[in-house]
Length: 240
Image 1 (cartoon, rainbow, N blue to C red):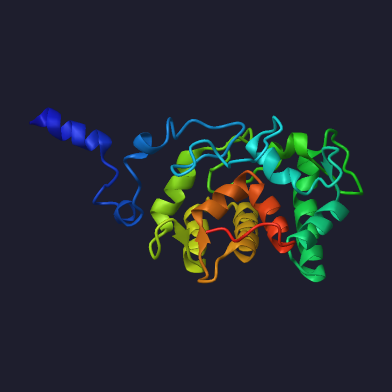
Image 2 (cartoon, rainbow, N blue to C red; image 1 turned 180 degrees about the horizontal axis):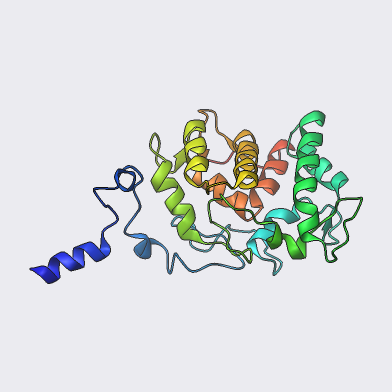
């Protein structure tokens, strides 16, 4: 009997004296839906519904985080300059003012940590090869520190916070998710997380005001940006 109780305790995801573990549920069947869900993937961003990642999306032998950033590398030279980011946001449908604000924030925040030298650059470039250095705290943990994608953390995000509609997050749930991932005294991480998820919500929310797991997953590998640009040009239909 004691062995049975010990076995149950070993696999339990709930501690009754920690109510937050009851409130934020986690799946216990990920292994049956996705092989090795906790293993970081370098080239693709799979989930339980897309075990091979985004169909038709070319990884070009870049890490998932590099793929996420490379949409804004308009000339494909591996360096993102502010004017490329500004143009990229315009392609996604952001107006001139919001594109300018987002560009300034991103390049001021990310440029220096990705530079190949200790000397700052007045043009604020972001080097895609070193984009993993720009990873900040208080995030979802879906990227590891080398820019690989961890599928389980995407699944945990939606199982913990997606209450109203399965595999979708409302604006309130996105806010709660960023709050839940906050690390104590990580002021930069708090602000960066709110900023990034706010942009994603504006870009990819559906008609009912929900952010789908598919949209979030495709944001991580950058294919969402390609999709949104094509949708604006009328080349593809809407994502469900």
